[in-house]
Image 1 (cartoon, helix red, strand yellow):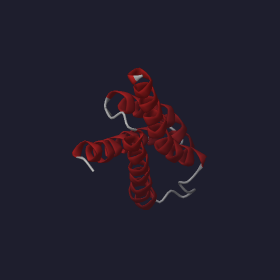
Image 2 (image 1 turned 90 degrees about the vertical axis):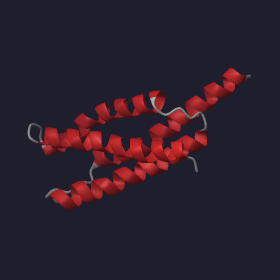
Image 3 (image 1 turned 60 degrees about the vertical axis):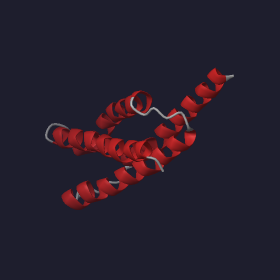
Image 4 (image 1 turned 120 degrees about the vertical axis):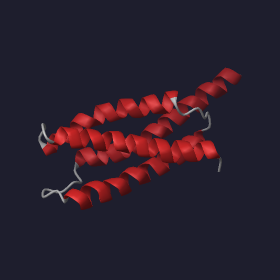
Length: 125
């Protein structure tokens, strides 16, 4: 495992989670809690795609597979400790928006990796 892969996985995974966490904390004061995830979702998706296509330079699908797994683990674990355990939401935390967020966190790197690897292969032929 190389240094760049670890940086991409751990640093960008944490930064992306932190962006969503910070937005959630800011929106908590002005938006009903049930809508926060739905408001953050498009912003988080755009930011994640920007990172995947502008900051992650690898062209191998394997690299993106690793990102998908680590990023998903980061958001699930950090959400549990820093949202569920810390705030103990009375109506629960795990709702459709959260499951979609977890799915996108896993799927977006795979889509980016597939796209980058397939366009790189096409360009090499």
